[in-house]
Amino acid sequence: MSSVFYESININNYKLLLAYTKEHVVRLWFNAAPLAEKNFLYSLNSDFDKLHKSEFKSEYTLLIEEYLNGKSKNLNIPVKLIGTDFNKRVWTELMKIPYGELRNYGEIAKAVGNEKASRAVGNANNKNNIVLIVPCHRVIGSDNNLVGFAPGLEYKVQLLEMEGHKIVKKGNDRIKKILYYVEK
Image (cartoon, rainbow, N blue to C red; front, side):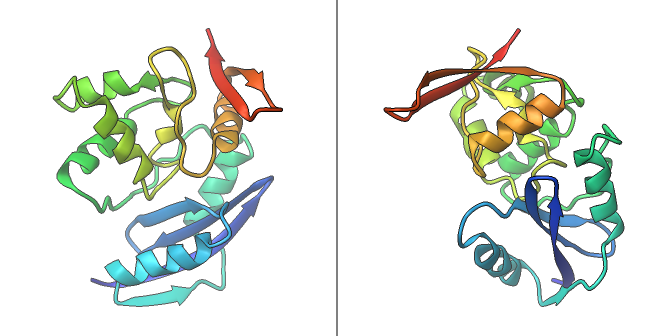
């Protein structure tokens, strides 16, 4: 256990929470839910001895800003993955997906050695504590459906559109049955 620094980031319409040590990023969350920051700090307290609110933008924040402002397509930032062995294998595989490319859950399951583990891959994505850098937003359903994104599908849509994908919205707002698809 060691000290960790944290900060809030506001870039365009993205609100993020970042935590890092001097060596690597340990958390990057969307600050989308009402209790997100409280839960973020709670999760950090369970893994680290000392928390320090950063008074300055870190070098990691500057790289994330460049990425979200479209000035960089690379988030080559060192990370420390904290989770089960399976989750770490999934997250490592996600980091191999290049900017602008997509994989489906079955492809990731096969890549980590268990082609029947699509649901487990989805669960690992849901537990991803380092969004953007571990790009779980680049994983879609086998039918090109945008399924699951813990911060909310609207963020997944925005990120994929930023990476050059055309997203099609199908469904009915009135009954709140809306599906998003990647148009190929």
